[in-house]
Length: 231
Image (cartoon, rainbow, N blue to C red; front, side, top):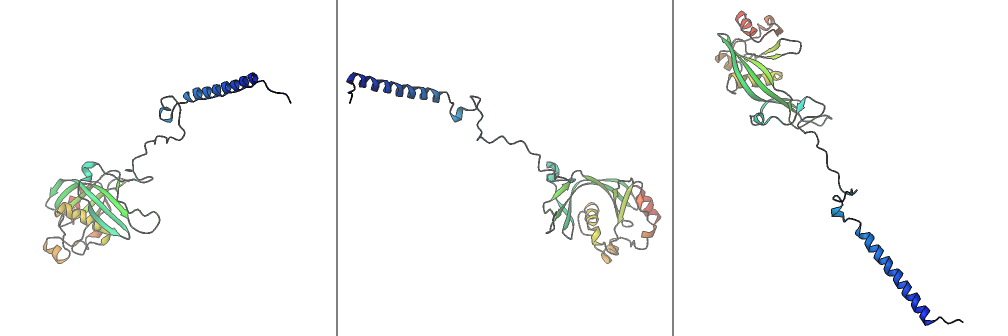
């Protein structure tokens, strides 16, 4: 068996140590070139595990796919919300933005009222929405405060105005509850107008025998003066 020279053995050990030291040194240098995670953005390195910035989403003021909004302008939001009617899960509301008398005669006074209308659905059927939502734009309605021919008028898409009369003597049907509430707010300071004997005592006339003589539409809200005079 050949013997290894002590000098040769010592040299081999030294060489191995040098190689190990060199490897450690190179490893340390390489690690210094990788930026720490907190400095990655400054170094131009994108961190895949960082959440991307959220894009601004559309305001929830608009109800998608409808002509309604959730949030009214601040000055309108402060106004009282008045319930018009509730029927079969549908409740309607309005905010009275403004009202102004635009004409008057012995037959009655004509007011232009700007309202912001809203509604809710309450039920178990699909599509029902219990959250109050408002029309995108306010509406102008005309109210004829009259003991002879109380009426509420609306503009219609085909032109002109439709109008609904309120017969307090015979009794206002539930389907006209919204118009009744609007009329009372404009013409009677929000107070309830009694029906039948109370209405007669307040000066209201029965309309039942006069409805056949009324036109279906008006060209202008001011036509109501002529119609009331000719009854």
